Image (cartoon, rainbow, N blue to C red; front, side):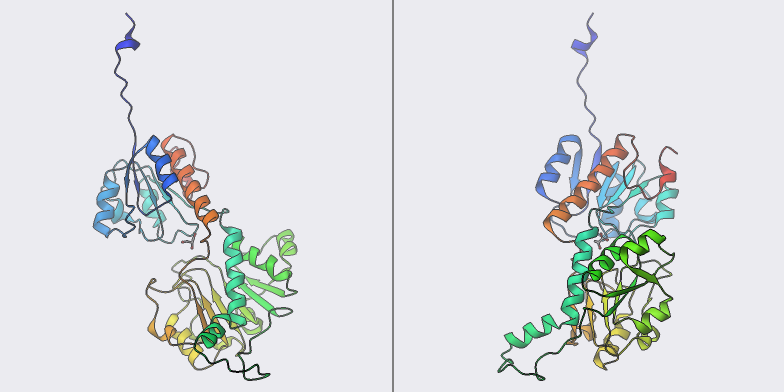
Length: 337
Ligand code: DGY
């Protein structure tokens, strides 16, 4: 008897969660291989909704808005992977995810240049007062060209940029700064290799020396409990009154209240922020400052890069659910355990 002819063609499609809105083509591709529970309304789940959703699936695509910890995973008995659509993963409690035997992945590399471009754009806009100037024009304040009574900024060329956090994105900013003839100093948990220092033209200094000597301070370090308020009132007090501060890392790295006070009292020249403590809320004192450029966490936001981030997250999820090692696995010890 030909058993193949009568065997029902059961196809088990693994269940997955897509916790935030993604590109329609990516969702359609996922639907071919998986039973997809997707949240295309883009409304952020409550912790209870997230816990429920994770309890039903084998894989999940999430973003920084989803806090993945022991509580979120408490009923996720079949979950194999949480794939973050983000390079930063401070929304992950990695020890808790690992203890639950779940793989965790992120999206490095694909956003490095886009994010470094944005960091440099924010630096230029801040130093040269571009948004403040635009408001000036729109509000009818521009009545004549003036040598002194127009918004005067700070130079980038041949100035010193101090980069705190010298990973891939920090190095990308350093390389862009070289094209402007800038001197690059950096502070990081560890020194770069001699070759990497050379290719970035960067010199390692202490955090204090960086703050005291840089004309422009750029923050690109990951958020951890130890990095909370890396820049607070004491650090700002070390900076030059002519200095700018750029944060494309995470809210919480900077004490926003201390920064607002420093901007209002002229302790530093200006700031450019893409990330905020408690975002998307922005501290009202920061909103009162004119010497600030504000952006809504868009450093990686180009169409091409956001698609590449989603694609890499899907690659990680596909690999985990097929028993292969995800390309950007964070907790390697879980694979094959
Ligand atoms: C990242 O990838 O970390 C971006 O900041 C988006 O969260």
